[in-house]
Image (cartoon, rainbow, N blue to C red; front, side, top):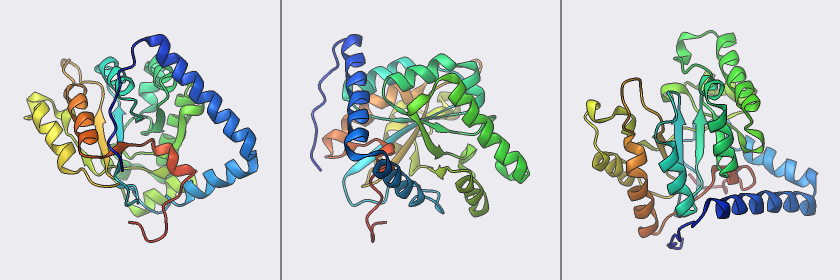
Length: 266
C-alpha cells in the first residue's frame, strides 16, 4: 500500500464541500449499480463479520482503522475532527445512547464530517450482569437514541461491547439484532489520563506497537468529571503521521460492508 501525503483542508467551507461531494457520489453509485446489488453487497459484507469479535480487519493490505469511543462528554472532539479532516482520514465513533441523548449536536457534527457512527450500548454496563432482555434493550435503546439525534446515513450496523467484554453467546445475540461486533486490536489507553499513569508518548507508542495490516485502533473522546485533558486528542496527529510514514493507509470501516474479506485472509 502506498504512503500518502496529507494536504491540509484550508477552510470549513471546503470540508463541507467534500462532505456534499461524498454524499452525491454515494447516491450516484447506488443509482448506477442498482439498489438490489447494493443491498446484497452490504448484506454479504455484514454477515461475513458475524460470529466474531472482529479485533482486526481480515486483510493482507497495509490498511488500518481508527476508532473513537464516547460515553462521558465531548471534550477533545474539536481537535480530533480538525486533525481527521486535515489528514483526510476517516474514523468510526462508537457512542453510547446516553451520550447521544445528551449531545445530539455532536452526533450530527460527526455525521456531517463524513465519519461513521457505531453503537456502544445505551448506558455502558457490564453485559454479563444483564439478562438477555436487558442486553437487547441496551442495544436497541442506543440505536434509537442515535437515530433520534440525527445519525442518518452515518449510522453503521456495528456494535462495540462496553469494556470490550465479549462472550460468544452475547455476540450471537448482537448478530441476531443485525449488528456485527467490532472490537479493536489495541487501545491507546489515553482515556486513563495522567492520573492513571498515561502520557501522550505512551498512547502513541501503544498504537504504533500494534500497527500491522488490518489493525483497529481504539481511542476515546471525552473526559470524566473533574478532568479536562484528552490524551488521545493530543496523540492523534502523531499517530496519523506515523501511519502514513510507515506506508499504511487509514480506511473507513464501512467499506467492509461492500468488500467482504477474501477467503484465506485472517
